[in-house]
Image (cartoon, one colour):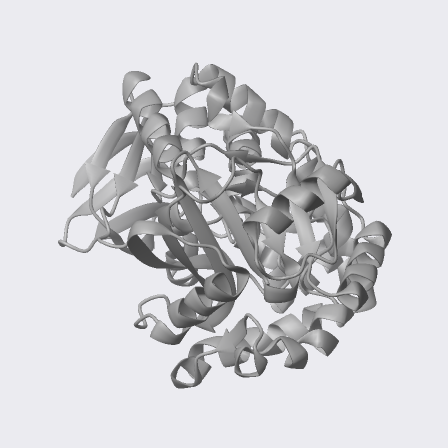
Amino acid sequence: MRKAAGTLVIGSGVVGKTCALALRRAGETVTLLDPQAPSRPASYGNAGHIAIEQVEPLASPAAVTSAFGRLFALGGPLDFRLGDIAAWGPWAARFVAASTPGGAVRGRRALGALLEDALPAWRRLAASLDRPDLLVERGHLVVWESPASARAGLAAWRAADTGQARLAPLPDAETARLRRLVSAPIAGGAAFENTGQVSDPVLMLRLLDEAFDASGGERRLGRAARLESVDGQVEVLLDDGQRLTPERVLVAGGVGSGALMRGLGHAAPVIAERGYHLEGGADHWDDLPPVVFEDRSLILTRFGDRLRAASFVEFGREASPPDPRKWARLRRHLSELGVRLEGPVAEWMGARPTLPDYLPAIGASRRVGGLYYAFGHQHLGLTLAAATGELVAALMGGGAPSVDLAPFDLDRFDRGLGQKMRKTA
């Protein structure tokens, strides 16, 4: 058994890294447990978009009623791996139960509070890294390929709660520019302001590592296999058989966080919501902000001389093999759009950690002393990473977080405990 002073952060994605750095800068002794997995995390493979416009929760009546028409088999982005039904079946039942009108209102309020400071938090983080160029604030574009979908899409966005983001019809100059780049018709579009992107996800992760190391943080290679409660405190069992006994533990390990928390009696119904991308040279693509082709559920983002095409919402087990049909569909979309990726084209698949109500879990355990958590950020992991780091540092430092964390308490999934808490309140 190895004694470990201070805080052990489990998780090496962008949320884990930002939390570890924020805690270290707050004066904590911090060890970051890095599994060095062969696959790159969702932090690396996502679209790089700071999506503060995504205030409307995905757990809503509208999402449930539209799900059939968005299935992969019908040309859409939504897929459920049949062989993994034991993983996503119970999760889907919880999702439907959470997707009530009242649940959507509560989700919108909770996400709105988190997203309000997401972009300012990224500005602060980029400035603290002495790399303000890491954050690119040029908004993003959404386009549609038919007059009907353009009318419906623009109306839907105008009716949606987009928080601090603002949108307007796509200017004629941008429409003409896209029509020169894309062979498919561009019937209409919207230009969003006050959203952004990271300039390079690989650079982002490297800068966070370098800042953590420079601040005196310790990095330990290994994977947490199980958490155990010993005399009311957390012990961490590594997959090589070693045990760590830190003073405090922060679980920020993405999809794998669910199993760790469940081992200590928490209900943590996190699912692997898998996405796919293709990436190649961007010689034939202009220096544009992220462009969403909403009819195809496809986003194109340029990172320097590389262009990334990302899509799909595939529910399954994190470790299940990739589905080559997803990359084939991406290639078909690019071909139909007339968009060419130059040179070697990289394929990637990664898992977003998603809870049934599409709200993250951020808080402190009531079951075990010294146990904290920050995971389940779904599509908004990159967007909310900087803000989550600040919130966790305040929470673990004994201060008052700037956002009410009650909606993100993991015990919301434990009905028995929740009932007891209401009776004693």
